[in-house]
Length: 361
Image 1 (spheres, one colour):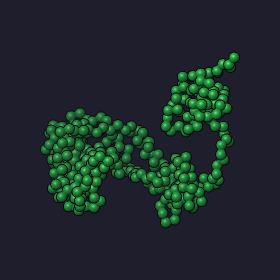
Image 2 (cartoon, rainbow, N blue to C red; image 1 turned 45 degrees about the vertical axis):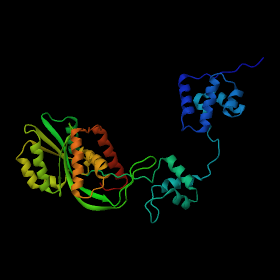
Image 3 (cartoon, rainbow, N blue to C red; image 1 turned 45 degrees about the horizontal axis):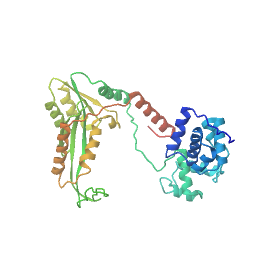
Image 4 (cartoon, rainbow, N blue to C red; image 1 turned 90 degrees about the vertical axis):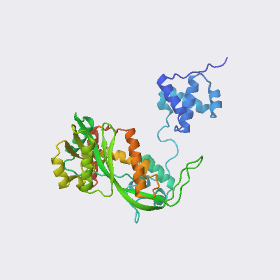
């Protein structure tokens, strides 16, 4: 009489985890096989049949079945100390980690190959150690922590306008996009095609620049705009007068702008003092990311300016005007969704990290 086939007892939660391991492309092969063994044994499949299906030995099926029966999912892990011993000395591993943040002589950073040559190990080993430690010395992000002494006051002033705009008023995010270049590519690029990306020449002819003044309505997403050859207080004042003309006279105007000296010129200040419906709100220094119009400028650059080839400044202006007109026909508001307290906490952590690193802020 044949021995009855034992069936592993698997809870619904354990079954879901085992199925996840079997189906996930990131699961190591050995863990996938072990999970598959347990799933088949829980379905009443015999050891020999499981071994045949998975291409493993019967003792291996028995081992992992018994380990799971005793310890559950924890039993499918390798025991500490098992497997091949590390071939790289601990001191060398420590050097790999420490050198990741150091600059070698004559260079700004190590590469996996240069550090591997220095330490006498393989570049793959260096990459693996950096990956395990979460180190990415090849990547770089730009940042700037504001040194404005009234940072929090200005921060909450601007965020408050976004989260709770005053009644009977317009919140306008204002700024200049300077140095919009009319660049003409020296040759016609190839169009997009099957198996072929669009192309453009790396060189170009410069035909001059213009400045775009824009005021983005926070609630509606519509724009008031004009182009100028320069961006002094004279042009800024002309733009303020345009805003005055093109907005309802019976509403207050809350303008968010950066700390550019043009915005605070004495002639501008005197003009604003005579028009009490204008209220200026300045972002903290080095914090243009708080002004929503900057997000629009990024779209404009990507959709219109950077991808084009313009034979003259007037051709660039025509393209920008067409883009803005279409945008106003289909306005797209941007919304402030960041938690103000969390944003401030992040900035405070950045300040603390810089202080610990000995940076002057």
